[in-house]
Length: 79
Image (cartoon, rainbow, N blue to C red):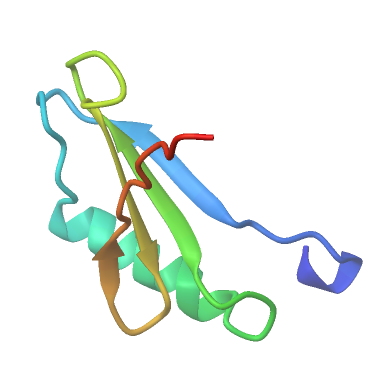
């Protein structure tokens, strides 16, 4: 995939909980993808959708191959 110029920049799935958190399997999956893509991208996005309505039910992390960090939501700024 990478040799053809295609890059996976993220993964997503759902969890049966209101405010989702990555399981140990989720963490391992994100780490594996981040390490595999390290020569092409600086990290992968890992999103989990929970059972409460968006945006509260959506959590997003970024794994750079060394750590999985929760992405911070940018607040709307007045124009």
